[in-house]
Image 1 (spheres, rainbow, N blue to C red):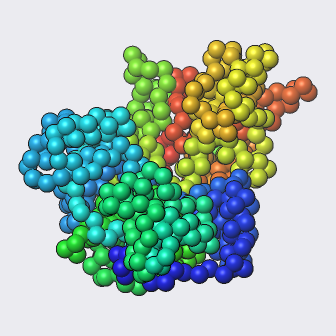
Image 2 (image 1 turned 135 degrees about the horizontal axis):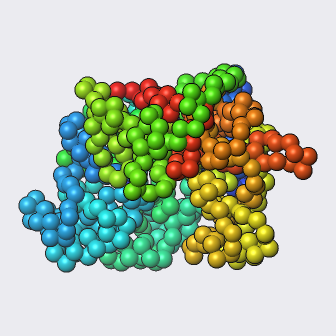
Image 3 (image 1 turned 45 degrees about the vertical axis):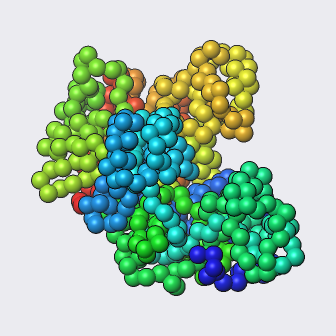
Amino acid sequence: MLADIPQLNVYPRDQIAEYIEAVSSGRNAGVQLLIDAANKKGATHTWINNSTAIVEHKGKRILAYRYFGAESALAAVLYGDKAFTKEVWEKAGVATPKGGLVSSAAEAIAFQREIRAPIVVKPRFSFASKGVSVELSTEQEIRDAYTLAKRYNRDVLAEEFLEIQTEYRCFVGAGEVYALVERLPPHVIGDGTSTIGKLIEDRNHVRETIPSTRNEPIEIEGRVESYLAARGKSVETVLPSGEIQQLSHMRILGEGGDLYGVLDKASDGLKELAVTAAEVIPGAHWAGLDLIETAEGKIYAIEINSNSQTNGIEYPSYGQPIPIAKILLEERFKQAEKPRLRNRVLRQAKIKTPPPSGSAQQPPIESDGPDNILLHRLFYRYLVAQGYELEWIGRAVVKAHKGRKVHWFAGCLSIGDLAVVQNVMRKHALVRRALNAANVPRTNGKVMKTGEKLKEYLAEQNRPIAVTPHSGKWKGAEVSVCLTPEEAPIRENQATKYGYYVQPVRPGTRLRILAGPDKCFAVLQTDTNTLEQIDESVALASQAVRAIPGLRWAAVDVVLPKTSSGETRPWVEGLSTDPVVSRVHRLVCGELDEFYEFLLSAVDSQ
């Protein structure tokens, strides 16, 4: 509460100068904080781009990307499912607003009538409060809110609206609350002579001295003017000395809010609720949890988040700073393993040309089905063949049951796969930068910054070109190939700063190798050429996986083009964790069963 806040924190310029300079130059604040903590530990680092770095210490390597922590890729998907988190919290006895999915505006209206109180309507999957409407009481308000939520997601959630006295962001993981901050709305304190407008101007100067509020000024026009007007005031009003004036309902840094470090004031009840809220979600090794406290003093869990900002934890405006980057660095290095630089040489399969669609090692692709199928679909068929029952959670997660065994998967990803790694894997151009940093042989490529540049480039080529949106994931040369400008996957909203990544599809034998950092599970081939460099290709695939610290496995696309001298040398085209398998693929080495069992063994039964 504003009446109880202490003096503003002061951060000496010489202590934050290096951090400020780095962030001002474009470095991501979360990664820079991790780098600063790593430097104090004696670790080394390599920047891949402004939002990505590789940190190494005593033979262990970790990947830093934006604000991602130690959360699993599976947990990050589940965090975004507001209906799922509400359900598991209710079952675990974690206080959370009443509510659930509604299939129509009429159902939302009926829910509001049932509880006889204002409600919130929001998309099941959304972020940054997009599509969220609050404090709804009339039928028309609810209908309009339902229509808005449907624009962002086909599933809509309705829940009771709670009056907030205090709002918190809590960092939790491994059974422990690491940090707790109270979110404060933008405000000024009167001095008896200055107008509110002048106080806001002075406050913005102070915000520039705090690392977490730099470049986040309180904007007068719009929300602040309306808030003051509703209370009979304006920016020309002079506040009495010591009077605190709230300026908006918003409590986020980007709207002029502040953070108040209060971990030292947290009750045991709040900590217990926070730990439980995270523990009931599979793979929630790290999370940013949003809590609220009502006027009655009751704590509720509202949302749980991945990629949660840490700069306000390190540098709150008020209260206790927490070295959250140092804590995260320790957790990440605990997760990391020293790579064993060896490669298992695969024996050629007993049946030299068993196509995946007919192999005894996996359920077949139906004869009347699609020619291409994603690997996770084949994996799910394997699970069914092994006696597992599959339950879909939302549209992206599967819960597999077999007796007392319960495993969770988002595609082929589980609680053993890190969200930080998989979010980098979704960006082909970024993966190629990491391959370059590790000196992994790869096919040539370049960036086309606009759709027009891409079309011009394709018009000049007389060869097939693989085109991937610069911020998109690799789907395979056979999926991404373009032969003419008309085939280019132009996105009207593709920002110029992102553009497209293009690379020639060189003729040659193509392999899709399912590999880990130090072993290979299976090799798929699309033609009938005799393989003469299988060991070299397998070794290259594992080298590519090792280039992404923390990556447990990947489908590595390798091409063996013939040179002018008739020699062949393997090159990496791209990496994926949910590749396409087609009817023309045949298994030439290894066992898909072994790969599927690897996916199962990496998952803790819950």
